[in-house]
Image (cartoon, rainbow over all chains, first blue to last red):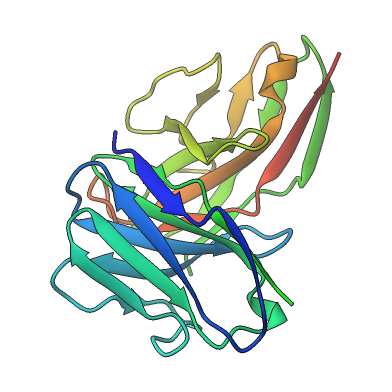
Length: 111
Length: 111
């Protein structure tokens, strides 16, 4: 299965700023997914990112807040924009390559 | 509506005791069901998927379409089984697509 490198692993950010999270895969994959896990909650899909097309966002998530790039089949970024304390969560990327693999997550704290 | 329900937030058992983590789902088509496990300080990893019908680390899970359940079972729990367990559903059979996660059950195996 694919191996995912996700960074940063954690960050503490000031409200109103933006953070870009990177996800690098060791093989080419068509589908990449970005999830959010709020404190004490389960994982919720933010968007699906396929190479060569715009990301598809789930209900409650918008591109202006969570812009995603997918420049090639092994890389994607998720930006959390204009952050507020409510954005404090773990963000994870995932890929489908015959099975789902997850990154190690980015623990974001907004102060 | 697509939904995965794990009714127990915390399950505590003694070493050697049987364990069953419950998962019920709501989906109108033919979903693919998964169990994921997250050990302390590790990334989310696949434990079981119903189409493979494997037994991993002594765990098994059977898809019961009549009861829309996919409970995870192990006859003799070990301390190293202590972790967070998530049941998840995909609506696109063996093709990728988004995962819908349950709330998770924390399993604690006491010595």
